[in-house]
Image (cartoon, rainbow, N blue to C red; front, top):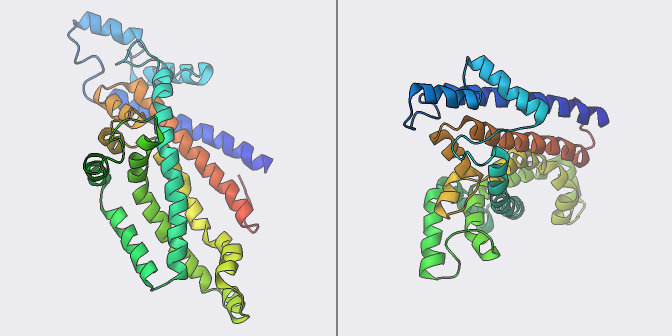
Length: 306
């Protein structure tokens, strides 16, 4: 276990370094540099580039950036918001995304498993058909339609919930549900299909033939195996919902990391964009590692190797 963690930690650092390098190079290679929109002479522009270490060849710029990142842990400053460092900007925006994303993750994972479990146990019944029809609708309808529709009905027409911002639990309800719906649908379908596969196994048929309660046997023994594909999906899903969604943040007026990505690209802010990608990638690496560890506890046949 300790060897696995050490190897995974080293490989994760290497992956993050590669992601940061590639993102930085691509961001400084796009047309129109970060100072193109500013009215300044060529001499002033050259001085600005030298000030931020963006002069010289791309390899030289990358070397300077990685040196700060590796040896100082410095994500540097934003080129657009020049009074703020990248760490400060992400520190301000990330909590909102984590709050909405964490709530959406709980709704999607718990709700999806419950819907899938009921659908599998009531195969071909109204519960099964209704649950899968709901899942199909949740996957098919994009969030930029679901969000405004929820605002119109629950916020404006019925007046039950506030239509924007984040801070109170009432403000969390609509954006969290809207963000969670497509993921809840995927989890529900994965759970149902996996459980149906487990129900067809010999040990489950034997348990049913002995007259044991099918729901209790499946919940106690079969769910550990059936849940494995779901756990695989939950890793990258967690990283996505926790870093926020540009559409959700735009619709519900939430200041989060999703907007940081878009603004950084629009402003050619290479430092802010790279910092945001590093945070996103770190979350993906962490949750994938967490999935591997959970696998080991769910199925003792699985051995962890580096």
